Length: 345
Image (cartoon, rainbow, N blue to C red; front, side):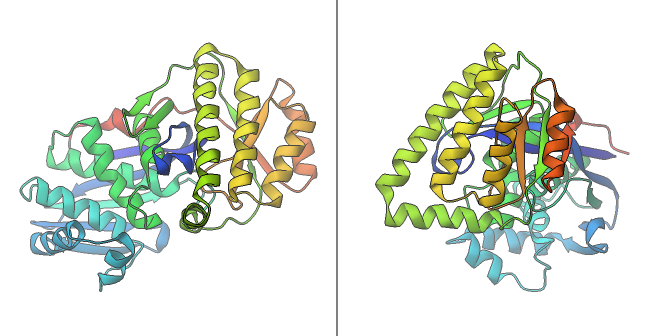
């Protein structure tokens, strides 16, 4: 049995979502895959095909011990450093499997799961979130677990918490990969599908090397400690931008969506999570007649997302000529949720 989970790009609200604000994202037609089949009785085996096939097999007692340590953690950083004998690239899946096993009476044993992905890593397309989401759904299906959407998203987020070493990670990325289409997230109401009234296909532009998301998230946290009032004002402005952006999406106002994307980017620049290359992509996109553009995800490099007008070829040529790899991305209406409850086999 295979489960596919799409990559995700953020239209509005990244970084602000960590502080309880709203974020909006779209899923794109690049996928992570988790393939599950029967394995060793009483154990869960995990294999990462994109990292040379590194693997681990955990018995019930292993998972119970890890889950106990995870639940008692004081912080994610300390938990990660406390786990010995587990490759940290496997740890997100180890935690998901361990928590799922303990909370469901050990019913996840006998599974062998291989994880792979066609989503670019460290680019701001939620590659790790898609892998965690596909893995969680595949394991739950294998075990016949009946989890709600909120429960599935919450347990898949454990993978993102480990990857980014932040308890608030994965809110919009996992939600977008789970539901597919266009999704908004807010702590008050959780994740919601957003009705899209206009074409939302976008251009993705590689601005160059990207800082780890954990680093840019930490930068905002440190800025918040040293200059909380400044950050508070920016986060409130991003929230207003997101609110108006949602209205534009739901009314089909592509011009409004684009302008608000660019406005959101400028606020993220003021927050210190953009860089010269990302700013250049946004400026070139504006000059090339796009509706708007912004960084996507953690920032500090990686992908920018551009909402183009009809003359896409001209804009792509201009960005490519300036040294930026550019490609079109279609919206994936299908998310990992579409595989929930899939038959075993």
